[in-house]
Amino acid sequence: MIVVSDNKALRGHLDSVREQSRVAFVPTMGNLHDGHLSLVHQAKAAADIVVVSIFVNPMQFGKEEDLATYPRTIDADIAALKAADVDVVFTPSIADIYPQGDQAHTAIRVPFLGEPLCGAQRPGHFDGVCTVVYKLFRLVQPDVAVFGEKDLQQLLIIQKMVQDLSLDIDIQQGLTSRAGDGLALSSRNQYLSDAERQIAPRLWQALQQCAKTLRGAANVSAENTLAQASHDLEAAGFTVHYLELRELQTLTTATDLSRDCALFVAATLGTTRLIDNIQISAAG
Ligand code: PAF
Image (cartoon, rainbow, N blue to C red; front, side, top):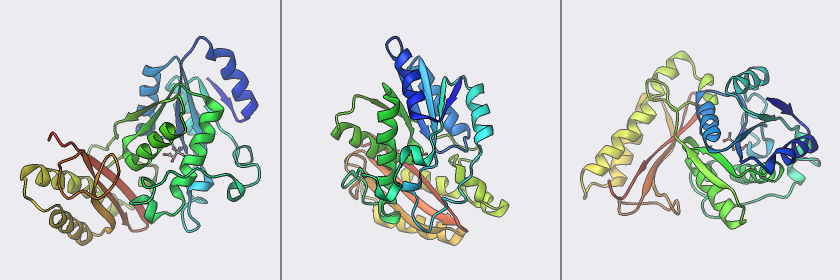
């Protein structure tokens, strides 16, 4: 495994192997857990060479967000990627990615899909994600890239960006990895206190319960089901930012399951923001 932080060294290395090899790419912000490693395993199955980037992207953090305190564990990350038999770890600096600062950088915005849910909660967040992912795609030039379903809105936005910008990259989705009690793995879970960690799995339980109710009866009101679940989560100690049923293709609000949908939730426990989702197909 090689670790490179320089754009030119990365390009030089990949250009020398690209002719004979398919390249798969997993972009990350580091602080790797089993969820990231399952994306890496998927990437390994899809290509000959696996590149993982570690870059805490300032452009996707709002002013009040946790950029300064976001967990950075580069040595442990590199050891985990070595053990997972990754070929190249790319660790660019902020100056490499944003030579004149992220505010002065050209931004990529995916309209509509980037506006609701986390887009409404975190203005500019998805512009920052798209910009850095596009830039990393240009540097790595992968054949395949793997993104987790845990960040389903992000995944849909990246798929749209790739389609709109005619990028020849196969975007694969990786299943959400969960702790034994159902909590979706996330780097931010470590911010939870012991008491909050006990409550946190209720988010996934609420999604499963809502999905079951909505699948169960044709005339059930999605609005009432979600309002009740939201109320129950608040009673358990969450501050619910959204719990919504949206159509998968467009992320417009859905009132029934006549099209493929997903339930999306974002809620904070104490100061920790958690997100999760569950897909519900029209076929049941
Ligand atoms: O999902 C993430 O960790 C980030 O949003 C990504 C895709 C690495 C871009 O910074």
